[in-house]
Image (cartoon, rainbow, N blue to C red; front, side):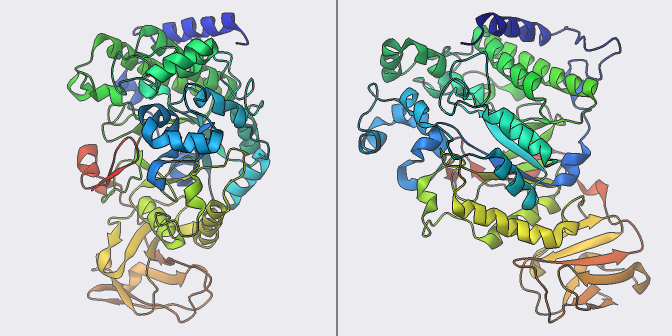
Length: 537
């Protein structure tokens, strides 16, 4: 480890700063957040996030070396755990690929094979900007205990092992040069159970093969553990690692994965029922968020937080609602869908096959983007790079298809807000607004005239003009008793998969009072995806 003294000091200072009653001494003036949830519920939505709409998510780490999942479907980034929990399923793969199985060959032995030898952060950043993204979220640490940054708190980091470079820092610099915002995501909340006999328990024990690996290579305990429980030592280290990311990289967003222990093993956060160890963890998380927000305020930076999961991590109003592959059916409070082009977040080699049946079409990607944005959401689309740092070509093609559509239709997405209704199913329409302009986005080929039913009662004076983005052809329209009727031109222009009609009106079209503020109600009817990435029908 680079500096044991620095690591211990960070753990001490962060643990102190997050304690209830601690005063965050940023400056002589009073910090804006006092350490309470009530204070954090007042955090504003940054303009860059509310306007940006499109983000890129990146799952990348030693698990990318393997790129495998049983049945070729599901979250491949969970493979480090599955090697030990399902040996009958994964030992044949390990023997064929690496010639050995745990304990002779385990996840610790995969780490040196993660080299990122063909990685160009500048090329990534350039691509992300070209395809219309405004911010990027990359895994700083997933559940596996591997740190993608230059860490003084663990030897299992990308500078000391594997790539031998600062993946988080180098990408951050490249993104900054391109004017993009950055969030190193943090998933360590599930680490105590990841290599343990019980996944979501306050106290567990390492699996037998993990014990044997740690006995053979003592340093591996710092990867697989060192704690297999939610002890004070784990919690203090959890906070210290984020504090190190925050201090070194000044992220624009604190992205934390959902924390299952809040509702497992005798805990029920929503009923205020937490075991002492978990209450301490919850209090420290509140302090960690408070420190992040106050640190940014002192620097004059606009930052934000996510509130992940069906059982949300934090009280409503603390950051944006978020869930894997989330598709609200209503206009909700600010939310974000982290979603994939295929079935995995991490690299899954099977997805490279042109015949992979769980791969979304370009049209499905565009339609999902439009539906999310029309309901006050942000579209955080994920890529899973290979271990060498290259992005699979099929994912690049999907990104570029999205980028081509956004280049034509950006006016309907960037800086947009929701309307009084988000959709009209009988015409396959979605709606967004920007100032006095209503955008009616048709997600089927507009070959016939159609009526926007929610404009019933409009008069000709309410409509100034109608045009089709991406087309120079004139658009005929008329106001009828049923609403505004639009006659699409024969020349539909250059857009594909969805066509946005810009309707300039005589008044602002945003309706802020249509939000479903009850997050439980907003989540009703959304697709259920479990913590392993399996869809529950």
